[in-house]
Length: 142
Image (cartoon, rainbow, N blue to C red; front, side):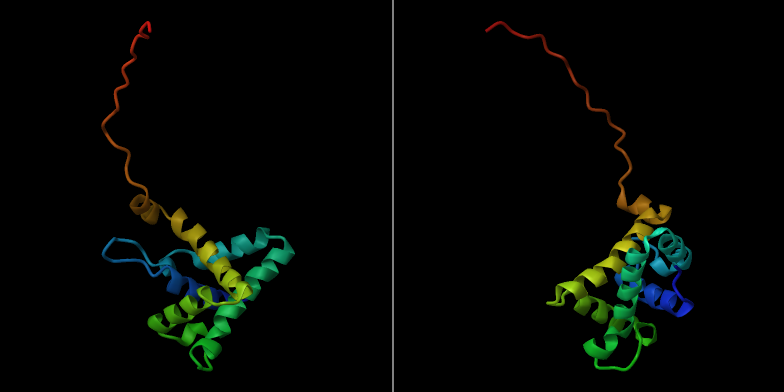
């Protein structure tokens, strides 16, 4: 099973709202990464039920602007600020199923985002140069 091209665009738009990057910290936008290739590879190895769950999560986020913003548009047609509002509304929904489906996309994006070498170097501090000396003491008689 693979995602259709329009479904990939919806997923990328949602992930860009969740992982916009930060120019201050030097973190890249997830859109600069190979999201399409990642999604194709990931969906290809999933069992069909899990793949349907991912597809359902994409469709939920894609059409959420209708309920969240009262606009008849998909998430692709929204500004970055409105995309973020939609994703935040889904993540804070009172309905467990909606929160969980939105979390599916957040988790997929986190897997891709944290695997990127440019991001990983910012997330994981370099090892300390100093070595902690451990001195062995002789046991004392009590």
